[in-house]
Amino acid sequence: MNSIIKTIFSKNQNESVHQLIYFICLCLLIASLPTSYFMISVSLLLMSINWLAERNYKEKIQRFLNNKPAIILASIYLVYIVGMIWTSNWKNGLGFELQNKLPIFGLTFIIASSKALSKERLLALPIIFSLSVLVTTLIGTYFYLTKEIIDTRELSPFVVHIYLSMMIVLVIFMMPDAIRKITHNKKWFYASLIASLWLLFYLLLLSSLTGLLCLIVVIAYYSFRYIFFTKGIVKKVIAILTILALAVFVFIIAFTIASPLTRKINPDNEEMKELTKEGNKYNHNSLNPARENGYFIFYYVAENELREAWEERSNFNFYDRGATGQKIQFTAYRYLTSKGLRKDRESLSSLTDEEISAIENGIANYLYLQWPHPLVRIHKVLWEVQEYNRTGNPSGHTLTQRMDLWRASWAAFKELPLLGWGTGDILEALDYGLTKINSSLENRNMKPHNQILSILLMVGIIGLIIISSQIYFFIKKSNALKHIHFKILCIIFLVSIFSLSPIDSAVGLNFLLFFSLYYGLMCIED
Image (tube, rainbow, N blue to C red):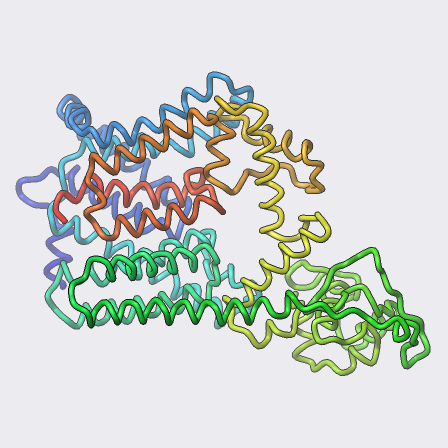
């Protein structure tokens, strides 16, 4: 392995120093994807400077013009440039949107116009990326063990946890294969398998629904593919049993999560007249239908009594926000309700110190102390959707805010469907849509969190058709689908675009773009 590393990072006799710098810049770029927004920009800047310093412009431009897949992919940027013609917010269009999407043209142009890397260097790139992701998870684990991490999203210390989860899914499958190709030493291959198992565990701990869904779809796709294209009854039976086991597992999880959400326990009219043990009346808010594990949250509330009891056991004021920014009062209401308890002194006294600490840390359901992180995350999302459907209020919850943004985006799109609002006017479009649907969201400076809607708002249905066609023809012309890991990348992209706008994010764009270029332009051989 040492000799391989030395060969990769040493200047060969028949290459210029600029070719070595180009490779080092690529290494820096992919190592920065899970670790640093700033270094992504630095690596792209250094790569551009090196390209200019190398000269040979005519030869390099001709190399790019001879590469049809590269031209097709780079021309996506042109669609956004054309979208500036009818935009009104040039500051956002030039200063953010076009600048953020510049790698679509710039990185594609540099890679397509540069000389091909050696086989050893090509094989090294996925390993360097995998190691960067692996080190990031180890740093996240260190923070988890040494600091009080309340939200599992903090397990991604440098970039948005969803993008880290997407990278982890790719690396789980890519790293062992990359190690196997670069060295015949089985120790390294077995080490990569162990690392992939660790990353799988970390993905579950991270509890990103997008990442978990990407993993499930990848496994399902290849399981079905294995059934239909693999010869041999035994192998097919194993694949079918695997799918059935996965289906049963998903069903059990769904039943476990759905059971508390579908339960409805209505109070008895006579019991509602009862007093607390201290002789105080309960308040029953029949106008608020919110439930927790089937019980009404705002029934049987003795607020003053509960407040006094709470402040005797906690350093947090009852009306303050806890460690996660959630109001202690309502977290306590939900937690007590989840156990079927009333909101009074007697109920609070029955809680352990661990449960009091849980409420302080924003845990609103006693089941969250018993379930693994992925189940908790799924239950939270479903509860948010349930309450959104009941109340129509999206505030305070990520998914329900996105649901309002999706509705608003669609309303804005219907206003200007053909060409959209312009590349720079996406925020204005969202503001119009939120007003149109009478949304209660206070923060209007947000984007759709859906790549399809984002494109529709910027460049309309015509722009969406053009961009989709460009992506399709790039894949077809480059023959990138012959690489199994590019198929995984495509699955990750297709799953993510419904809850994210990866093309509008520096990390998401450069992650998807680099590996599209890697498998589409750089790796000629399978």
